[in-house]
Length: 170
Image 1 (cartoon, rainbow, N blue to C red):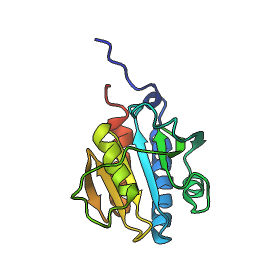
Image 2 (image 1 turned 90 degrees about the horizontal axis):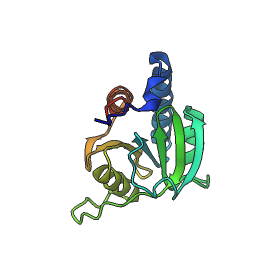
Image 3 (image 1 turned 60 degrees about the horizontal axis):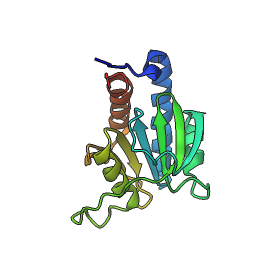
Image 4 (image 1 turned 90 degrees about the vertical axis):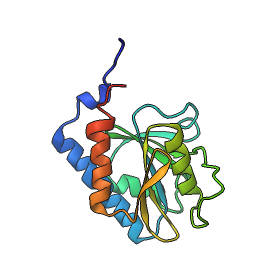
């Protein structure tokens, strides 16, 4: 059987991952306070072809400043999704397949639809910050797993990603 371990997961250290999680939580909370919309996809190299190509590869270290800079409302890439792969912000300004479901509540804007869409076609986690309300949602498997997510919830979603999803045999 040609089972391959994710090569990225191998060179993670606990302290490195903890720092990334801390920085990401800080960025998400800062954007939430300022009602800055954001959509972050935690990918393990399993996004449909074309999503990365629709954006810009940035390949940057994960810091709260970098995440916030990308989603700053006047920044050129703020409208699309940011794709995190392992310990890098891999791409930004990516366009995702929107969930077409008719029974989505009115307050679900295109960011939420994109999060529902991408998580139903790929086993990824999405973190959404609403620019209307500042509410943080965590989306997985095409459903909102947690609305009104707080620091603990975000931390948990990121920990699952770094310690389960990424290191899972794919």
